[in-house]
Image (cartoon, rainbow, N blue to C red; front, side, top):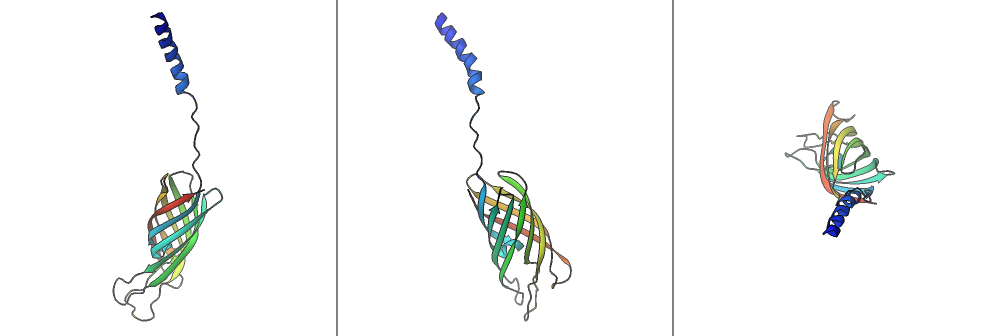
Length: 167
């Protein structure tokens, strides 16, 4: 019985030391490339977007290709492109970003002939979520200006879902 008591005492004394043993920490892999589908200025309105992360993954270059549909007959419509750069906050799953882009800012409505879709610079702030498995969601909003457009600032936005590969 004494041996059992001694073994039980030793087990309790060893348990805290075992529980405090350092577990090897897994470093998350850095982002390499993202592919999203959705809508917004940086995705070419209704389209897709590819993004390449540079260096430590806090800066990226992106390009979008999409289509601007007409809501009513006579609205400007057609293939749309976008491109730009993003700077990210630190984070593994949840990150904020600031985006500088050149994209379609405005769409002429009810123009029927000689319709224009003016491009210009835009600035957006956003949020990106990347799950451990790679699922990615992005949401952004900001302001843009088309020099050959209406002459006023326009609201920008974006919402996309896709996948992020890690290196």
